[in-house]
Image (cartoon, rainbow, N blue to C red; front, side, top):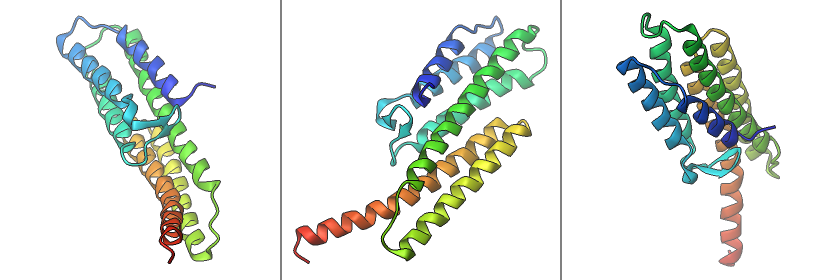
Length: 184
């Protein structure tokens, strides 16, 4: 199975070969290429399927902009007389949404794999994990309804909730370590 980053790189390579004689359509393709390229910046990623907790949200933001650019081409009648090109662009959009689903699921998995020794803290963690799962379900419904740009917003929210669950435990452990190091 490909990692999220590999899948995104392959998607970018596919988009790079799609060309249009229509200047406006090509401008939108070029914007999408730029946005996807920016979402691959190394500082946004900690591994091939995990995003940096502070900057990872930018990946979703860039992908949403790329998808919106591609949707403009698909939705504007007359820009493409060739239905194959529209199908290729839709495949790129589907691939980007697949990347975001993978990123959200990995974050949820990571959050579910942690346990707190404090029941109140565990409840906060579980609540955020449940929010993450609800947002993932909303995203899947948006995909089914043909709204990939809205799905990306929900996937971003899912990822953020999972990250928050992880942060709750990390913050407690950092505070605990600092107290031990300072003899408190």
